[in-house]
Image (cartoon, rainbow, N blue to C red; front, side, top):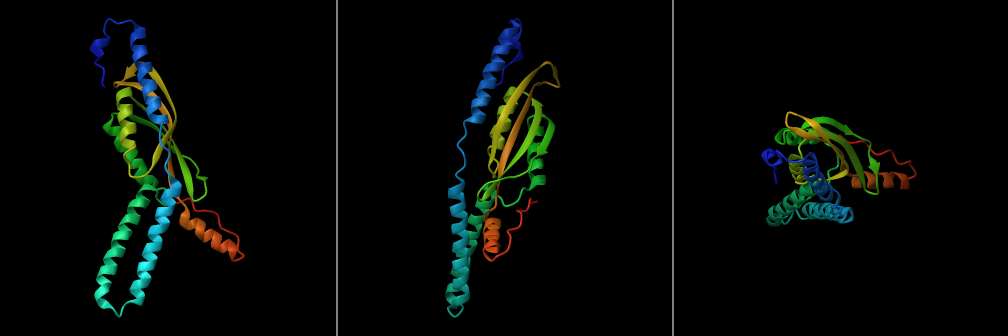
Length: 214
């Protein structure tokens, strides 16, 4: 995908501009045509796993007389807990800001980007999850920007890229040819907090505000 600079020597200025525009359109399509995550299905799976764990733990407590079955039940609990942990990596219950910053910084180093801006914004609360937008600005190249988005899409947690805007540099600095501004939107699971709030409100108390997370 990389374009040798030698191929542009002797070409009119609009030749390089046309190539850059074509790549920009390809990046725009790559970023904007994403399949939205099925939060309802994830919520049902998380609730189902927690319910299975609760039922199995109840069986353990009730079945201590049948000692020979306890190891089997404990192993089943361990397996379901691992499934739950994998789901919560995709849709975590906290922001984990420091970990996310480290991952983004690692990607910028790998792609020879200059990270100019990483600005987390406030939550946007939905039914049982919250959207967490983060404004990011980087300098780099068209080719490496495509790789950057591809690697970010492989993170364990869901991250969508929105509002991508790109501009070119006439005088390249350290080989960087573009400036990219975009919003990386990730998501926080609020199911447990939502159920607690409803329980308190139903008992006659006011539901507390949802925590911002760590």
